[in-house]
Length: 223
Image (cartoon, rainbow, N blue to C red; front, side, top):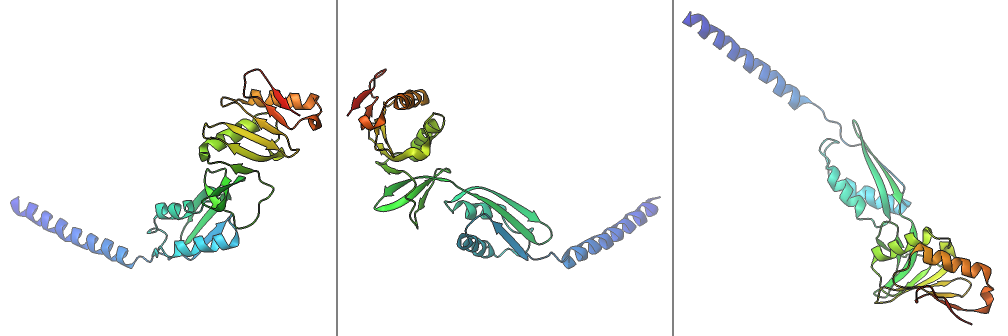
């Protein structure tokens, strides 16, 4: 009885060696396809090429070994990126779809003109964007985006604004393209803007240049 058990154990042992050898050989001989195509869409041709070169510099041997977090880090390093999707298409293709940010305003930072994006990042202006309003002062980017959201929820049209003025007290003024300066209270809401909009609508806007709404329930005009 003991001999039979010993024989069975010995047979199982040899079978295990044979199976292990087959598995190891299969893995060693497995030919994983190298990355052959990296397709990037959504950026300007130059930015697409820069991102493509940076991803290639990761030197991933195949689509399984490439680190998706490293790709995401490279994408996020570009300040014009708003959203993105990364797809691994097996066996050898990576597709990257990018949505660019929208630029809302211009601002001076250390003597250089930057664009404020909807993603809350600054992008160096490499060409003129004179159609965008200019911000005087040093607001926090989140504060500006919050301000813009209030404007968008009001009756005012954002594209009618020429300049913004931000003060250390965190108060805003805005200048319209028809040369009217609006002084806003520090705690303004979209209702405040709606009230000012209606005031401008029913009055001759050519008769004054300043609307001062810093005092609650009052509009002081300067002709």
